[in-house]
Amino acid sequence: MLLRIVVGYHFYKEGTSKLKSGTFTSKYFLASAKGPLAPYFRGMLEDPDGMEQLCIKRIAEADGIASLEIDSDLTFSIWNDFVDRTFSYYGLASPELMEQITNRIDQHEVDLAEAIESGDGKAELALIGKIADAKRAVARIQEQAARAEMILEDHEEQLTDFLSINEIELISHFGAVERLEGFERDGENRGDVAVYVDSLRGQVDSIRQDRQKKLTGWTGEVTGIWDSFESQINALAVDEQAKLAKMSIHRPFDDVNAKVKWIDRIIPWFDTVVGVLLIVGLFTRFASMAAALFLVSVILTQPPWIPGTTPTYFYFIELFALLVIFAVGAGRLGGLDFFLGIWPKKKSARLRTEIEVQS
Image (tube, rainbow, N blue to C red):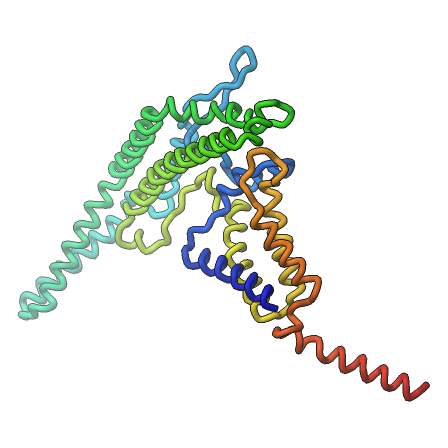
C-alpha cells in the first residue's frame, strides 16, 4: 500500500508540474533515442536534428560523398506565402475598408459640428478622439503593403545575417555527427573504449551535452526570428481587420499536428491521472500496468545495453515497483478497489452456501 502511494505521488507530481509549466516537451528525449527503435521514435519528430529549422541542406557531390550547405530558400518561400495569405485573410490594404472608414470619418465630422453647436463638450471630445483614431487607421491601411514588404525584408536580412555569422559552426556541428557516433558504434574498438573507460565515456557525454546546448541556442534564436515575423505581420491588421483571429505561420519543423505535439499533450495528463488512481487505489492494476508500459517505452528510447545512452536505471526501479503493485493488487488494501471487490466476494460466498445447503 505504501509503495503504491509513493509511486502514485511521484507520477502525480510529475504530471501536475508539467501541466503548470506548460513547457513540457519530449522532443529532445526522442531526438536522442538510440537502439533499434530509434528510427520509430525519431520519426515522431518533424525535424529531429534541427537541420530544416537552421536551413541546413544535404547535397551529394560528384563523387557521391554527402556534404552540407546553407539554403534558406524554403524558409523565405514560406514567409512570402504567409504575407500573401495574411493580405487575403485580413483584407490588408483594402480600398473598400478605407472607403468605409472615410465615410465614418465624414459622419463623425457631421456629428462633431452638431455637438459643437449644441455645446455638448463631452460628446465633442469623444468624437474628436474617434475621428483621430479613424484617420490613423486609414493611414495605417495605406501603409500596410509597404510595411509588410519592409517586415519581410528585415527578417530575411536577420536570418541571412545569423546564418552567415554561424555558417562555419553550423556546418561543422552537423558534419561532426558521424565522428561523435563513431565512439558508440558497435563492432569497433573505439566504441568499446568510449563505453568502458570512464574518462573517455565522460568526454563523449560532455561533447554531446555541449552540442545539444549549442543546438538549443541556435534553434531558439531562429525560432525568435520566426515568432517576430509572425507577430509583426499580424500586427498590421487594424480596425475591423484586427477583430479576426490571428494567423499562424506554417512551420515545417514545428507542425502543430505532429505526433510529438499530441504526445506532449497526453503525457502530463497521463502522469496526473495514473498518479491519482494509484494514490486512492482505484483501478490499481490497470493504472500500474499502464504506467509500467509507459516506463518501458521510455527505457526503449535509451536501451542500457546500447553504448552511449542516457542512464535509465532509475526507471527500472520504478518499473519493478509498478509490477509488484500490479501483481499483488495493492489497491485492495487501503484503496477504493476494496469496495469494488467486496460485492463479487459476497456473491460468491452466497453461492457457495447455497451449493452446500443443496448438497
